[in-house]
Image 1 (cartoon, rainbow, N blue to C red):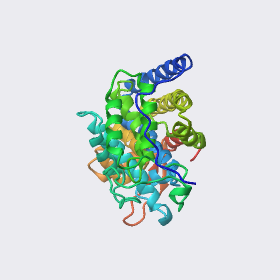
Image 2: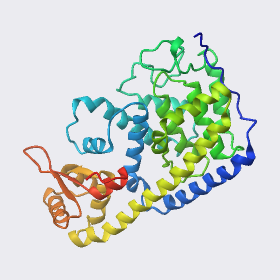
Image 3: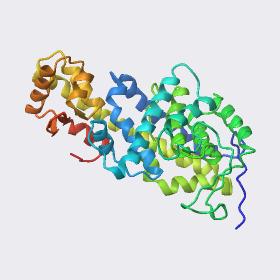
Image 4: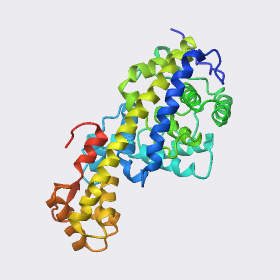
Length: 370
């Protein structure tokens, strides 16, 4: 089979069935509006939704083949030794989370651009598998996608020739910088076109999914870039890949945009429900932490557990702003006695004790983990 590199589809997209798309796009915008309404009401979204952010990093990386779980990432954050066979996967997840944080900080004072995307990619690939594949640089070689070890002749998809890539990326940047297009439609096209261009040697899927919340934030549909679609995309992985492939095989932008828009609707409602559960748990625990500890550190202690649902006693004291170990240990003891937190592992020698907020972990996972 003599396959040739894909010719990048021209932007913007034409020939769409607007009569079918507009009701779906309206529903997607409404669902995002409901979710952002809650996001705006959260006293500290970065703290409260920290477990959801970590779960996005886990799921987006899992689409690319990693096996790490949310519990393993959170346990690593607490200083629990990582099984050797999981180390590389966990580092990729941590890099994803760090790259997302870098991007959010950057968007506070600059617009999304090809330059910023290269910086995000540099952080994503730092010190992990693929670090030898020119992190932070667009490719100058031909790449292809298929089963491990397959040749270009047997590839499932061959991205554009590197000679046409610079011009195609500039056209793509102009498109996502345009504010005339409906944001949901635009982001559907931006994500798909990025995956088609596949401009990096590695990490394209993760960067492409990271662009979704960043662009929702830039287009003012979200007050924080904290909207995560990987849960839906991971659950519908085969159709996700098939719909992207159909764009270049048959020109089926309509099918892709319908799939993407439905993903936004479903995930916005799921994110809203999860965020509501997290806020309800926070509001429930706040007076209980105060009553159990009678301490000025009660609320900072609660915030520490929302930042790190599994946390060692050293990090707990630091994040809570507690300067003396006896005070920190006393607060932890009182919280365990009230069963507001659980002792995950007792301290031993130089290893600090580790505690967890199991209710929060179960909400973040969407199932009973602990």
